[in-house]
Length: 144
Image 1 (cartoon, rainbow, N blue to C red):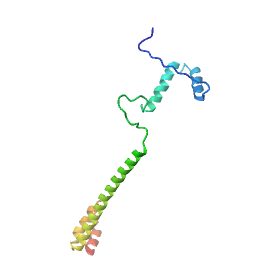
Image 2 (tube, rainbow, N blue to C red):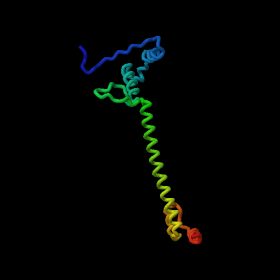
Image 3 (spheres, one colour):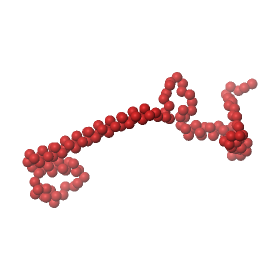
Image 4 (cartoon, rainbow, N blue to C red):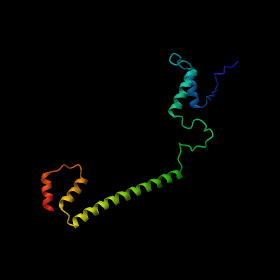
């Protein structure tokens, strides 16, 4: 009479196959002082392999026809490439617009003859890392 909490899976090894022969040798000569049993050794080996794959595509998908996450098609790559191009292009346009806008503000300030103080404050806002140096401030006032 079979127990309801036990299931059986048979393994057939072909001794003409090098991989199968290696497995047969290990299983036949398994050191039971280290490993509890051949059955537990096989369970541990399969469990280790399954965990190393992070359960990727080992079992059948039930109900859902999911796209295989392990492979990417050329169409997928082309889509990703075009999305990246558009994102990079938009980012470059924004950066160039901001740079050109800031450059026209500086040029307009200089042409309109606004005081050197305003130009200096704009430069200080751009260069927040620099400390206020009284010598540099006097030189800038002398140029303006």
